[in-house]
Structures are given as C-alpha cells and as structure tokens.
Amino acid sequence: MDRYIDIMKRTTELAETCLESLEHIKARLNEGEFESTMMMFHDFAHAFYQVQESIQPVLKELSDNEMKLLSDSLHKTIELIVSNYEEGNRGKVAEVLQFVMIPRYKRWQAEINNCFRPYLLS
Image 1 (cartoon, rainbow, N blue to C red):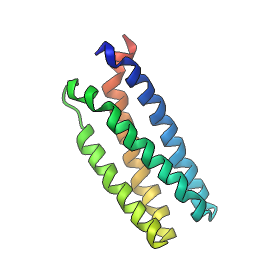
Image 2 (tube, helix red, strand yellow):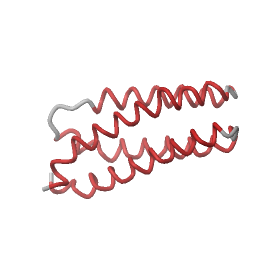
Image 3 (cartoon, one colour):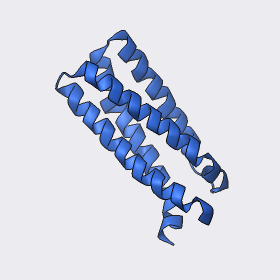
C-alpha cells in the first residue's frame, strides 16, 4: 500500500476541496445565483469523477468498505442535479444539493478518510 500513499493524501485533500465547492454552490444558489453555479457544479462533478478513477486501484486492495455503494449513490445524485440544471429547475437543484448531495458526499468523504487513515497515519 505504500505505493498508494501519495494518491491517498491527494484524494483526502481534493475530497475536502470538493466539499467546500459544494458548500459554496449551495450558498450561491441561496443567493439566487443559479446560472453561475452550473459551471461550478460541472467542475465539482469532474473532480469527483477524477478522484473515483484515481482511487480504483487503491480500493481493490482495501478490506471491505462501502465505497462502491456510496459512489454509486453519488453518481445518481449528480445525474439528478444535472438533469434539473438542464430543465432550469432552480428550486429542485438547491433542494437536492442541500438535502441529498451534501449529506451523501459527507458520508462518502468519511468513508474515504476511514479507509485511508490507517495508511496515512503510519
């Protein structure tokens, strides 16, 4: 697992940045800035998918965890938000982001941290 330490460190850092991004998008949506949040959400989704790709080799070597289930759930939520952006449904984007996306993302991030913590602390 030593060969994956750098990936684990960068992933935990990027995961935190992605959470900050979601919180910023939520704040902007609450301020009525719908259009400007579209590109921000696109950037978040792209970063999330990049993280997913980069950690696949690491996850294969870890013991049982809930990453697959949590990741699949986030993928579906991202798709839901994107479709609501495309439909111009401002209220639904804000609602799903606040009550579904951010809580699910936090669970995903906590699982990442739990999986990687033993290797990053040693």
